[in-house]
Image (tube, rainbow, N blue to C red; front, side, top):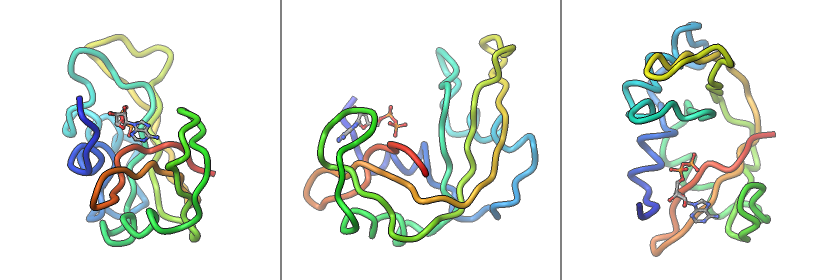
Length: 125
Ligand code: ADP
C-alpha cells in the first residue's frame, strides 16, 4: 500500500474529540478506523490536534526515524495531546482489546511526497 496523508489521517487523526478519553476509547476507535480487520494492529496513536498543527511538524526538526532508520522524520517542537492504544496480551482476534492511555508528548512523524505531508507515525516522547 502506498503511504499517503489520507491513510495517516485515518489511522492517527482525531482532532474533534477531547484528550480526556474514556477507557473504551481505543476499542471503539481502533475498530471504527479500520485497524482491527484481518488482525488487531498492536500499537497505534491518535492525535487530538488540528491537521494544520500536525502538518506543520513536517517543517520542524528533522531526525532519523526510530522504526525505519530513514531520515525523513520530524519531531514536534511542542507537546501535543495524544491517546496511545496498546493491544492487551489477553486480547484474541477478532476481539481486539486495547488499553487507552492519554498523554501530552512530542510526536515524531515521517513526511513524504510533494506536497511534503505526514505519512507515518513513528514515535512519541
Ligand atoms: P503507521 O506507521 O503510521 O502506524 P502504517 O504501518 O500503515 O501506519 O504505515 C504508514 C505508511 O508509511 C506505510 O506505507 C509505511 O511503509 C510508510 N512509512 C513508514 N516509514 C516511513 C518513512 N520513514 N517514510 C515514508 N513512509 C514511511
